[in-house]
Image (cartoon, rainbow, N blue to C red):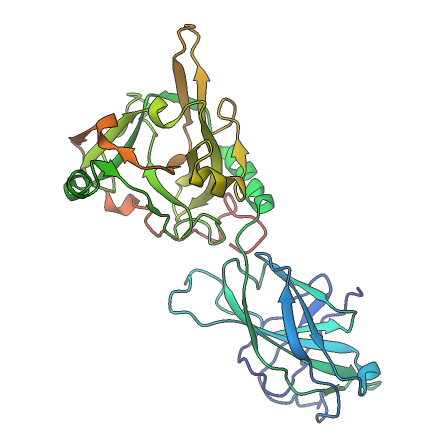
Length: 379
C-alpha cells in the first residue's frame, strides 16, 4: 500500500462523530485536521455522486488494529482515490481517565483493495469501544476532493493484549527484577470481618473473586480471571514478610509449598507502576488441569517454575525432597492463586504494623508515561 503524504488543512462536511485530531503519519494512513466545516480554500468540493460505503464489517480486531471492509454501488466507483475513516472513542462514564483523551477522528487512506488494515497505537487502545464511519473521496487534479455522504456508524471494541504483547512486558519486567531472595510463606492481608465471613459463610474457605482493573489496560486477566491475591515479598534485613500492609491488619499465612509445587503451573500476568518508583509484577499460580490453568494457557506466557526471574520453586540440596522458594527483590509480586484456600491450611494473626492505604493497588491505573513498564501498543 502506498504511503500518502501528510495532509494539511483538509476538511470535510460534518462527520457523524465529532472531534479534532493532530497530524500523524502512519504506515498507510494519514490523519488530517477537521473542524466540521469547509476549509477557506475550498479544498473539498460539494458532494457528488460517489458511492456511499454500506454494510461495513470490522474483523481481525487486536488491541491496536482492525480490518475494515464494506460494499459499494458500482456507480462512479472507478473515480474513488481515497477513503475517509471517521474513528472515535465511544463515550463511557467508566473510561480510563488516564488514557488518550483526544482520539483522532479522521483517517485518510489511499483507495486500496478491501479489507484494509487500520493500525496505530497512538489512537487505538486495548479493551476500548469505538465508533467508525466511512466516506469515499475523489481527489481532483487541482487538489480538491469530491466526497460521498457518510456511511452508517458502526461500533466495535478492541481486544486485550496478545501473548506477543505480554512477552514484551515480560522482557521489560525481567530487566529490573533484581536478585532472588529466599522465602517460605505466602500471605494475604484483610480485615477481621473478611476472615470471619470465610469461617461462617464459606465453610472456612477463602473463595476466588474476579480480578479488578488494576494494572495494564490491555491485561487479559482483568475482569475475567478468578483467583485470590497473595503476597510473598520479604524484608531484606529480616527475610520475613513486612509488618505493614495496605489491605488490613489481619494476615493469613500458608506454607509456600501448599500453593506452589511441581503440580502447579506459573504464568506471567502483568507489569505496571502507579506513578511511583515501585513496580509490580502480577503472577498466576494455577494447579495443573484446573479451570484457572486452562484459562491462563490460552492467554498468558507460561514460566518455568525452577528457572525464571520472579518466583521459583526448586528441590533443596539436602536430598530429602523439600522445596526451596525464591522471589525477585526489586519488584513487588502480586500472586493470584486460582483455587479456593481452606483457612485450616495456614494461620490467621494480627500484624503489629500499620495499614498503609496509599500502597493499595485496588483498581490502580497504570502510568502510561513510564518507559520502564510500557510497550508500544495501547496502554
